[in-house]
Length: 256
Image 1 (cartoon, rainbow, N blue to C red):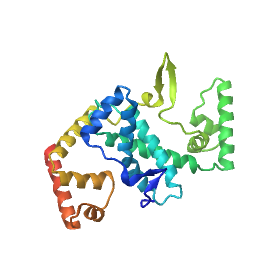
Image 2 (image 1 turned 60 degrees about the vertical axis):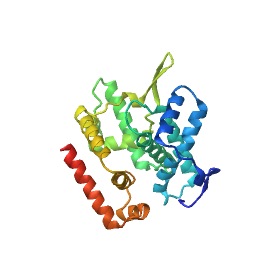
Image 3 (image 1 turned 120 degrees about the vertical axis):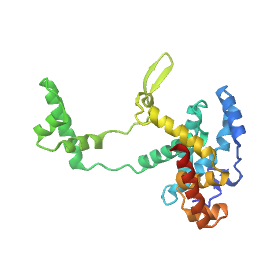
Image 4 (image 1 turned 45 degrees about the horizontal axis):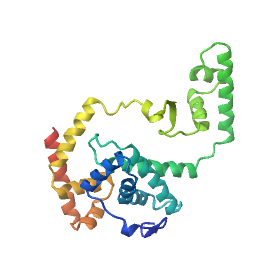
């Protein structure tokens, strides 16, 4: 898959590259409603899609289909990116692209729910309705007791017949203002302490040399081995290992 040059009619070897200044300029124009700037920006970031779908090289799904799914993620990332957050577009976009590709693969290879699990789920739903009709509390514990099964079987059965939803599904719309499911999810991960740590980490990484930063990016962001990195940047594996260890040590000293 990685050797294919033309995908969806696009010659990937000729895709343009955008510098950080070009990206920022185009993002400002996009915020102003410039559709041509948006088209140029998306085209200039399609290499992000290529880097993501390489992870699925063993998949039997058509590379063209994966690329199209990735491009949908890229478009969503472009539409939702906030320049005030203080992160690079690629940092924000790659998880969005990856999520869209995985969503496509899940939809294409959806698991079949066994008959026994479906039957259990329907019994659970029926029992829940009966308990509600009796003005009782239809907790998983009460349902499990009435059906003489374990609570986890109740939860598993209901999960198995639930349709997956997208975080970008609208849950409320009033006077043109759409509220997404994503807006209703509390962020328990990015607490004030975590944000402080991230800022400190970002500042520490900025003080590294370009080569060290690239090694850490390839190693921990793209998940490449030291051998793969050595081939890409033209250093020996031992040199890459030494630079990686020194970079991590420097970061640790800066934030501790």
